[in-house]
Length: 87
Image (cartoon, rainbow, N blue to C red; front, side, top):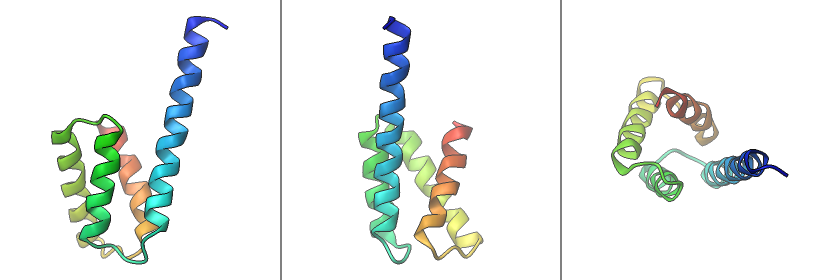
């Protein structure tokens, strides 16, 4: 297996682990509250996303949740995905 194949495989495993962590976290909440955002912040920081970027993402998520009256924690997944692609 070449270096690039191993690198690609490693990155795919990291991505899958990250997605599973986010899904598990969001599924563990019945409502969107500050605790959810704090735990989401921890997962993002542990995933080596810069703290300033994490804070910006969390604030933007909070605003979108409020503006769009989102109540289902699982809906945050799509918002988060959008924010991460914007970086």
